[in-house]
Image 1 (tube, rainbow, N blue to C red):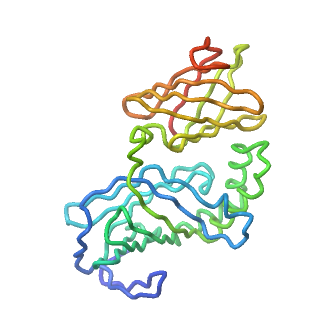
Image 2 (cartoon, rainbow, N blue to C red):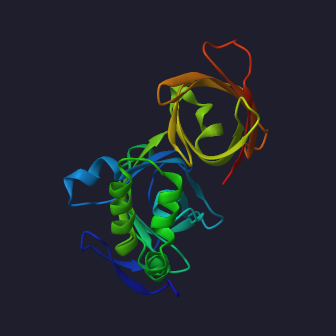
Length: 280
């Protein structure tokens, strides 16, 4: 896709010349979080249409143009890691238009700073990919495996199908949570495995978002609560049905793996098994 000397119509109908001179005066670098929202018309789907993007980065390249990196939520991609790099093509005091050089989509961001920006995304170039995932059942298959036993599975599927049919959305950016700067070490999707008290290994996909999390196995789902980070250590409580206990994860220096254990009852009680994970 050639970007220079092209006219581009944004979601608001404004017409821009691609390849124009950039002159926005936002902060030169930003690392924060974003809440990505899939537009759904069914009110029952709205509670499941919001996704935290744990690490949104904006930098300037050698040409002085902003570059935004976004990873789409796994629940919308069928478990595939899809990273979109968007490069600034036009800007003024209120608006920045960023385009993916591969033609996969664009973002129109409004706001005086990145920390207060609200962005609208359209990923038209990904439509064929998502059409194929809808056709072969990849999108719904991932969710059925991850959320097996979840009473809201059909609603999660409805959101994923809505996005797969028309991959658009909005995101409000915000700085990393100053009250939980260490959360970025754990935030995201993990392939995890724990051993039961009887020594059985259980595969359990795990999602961590700030101070809470959720994990899933063949029988249902559990929650991680009250997560506290100190250096590369995370501690907190797990809850699965009527049962609960403690967990302790130690993350690798690159944030790609963790190892730890879990136990029943209060923190400090004997360990009942190991719990390890690898970032997806």
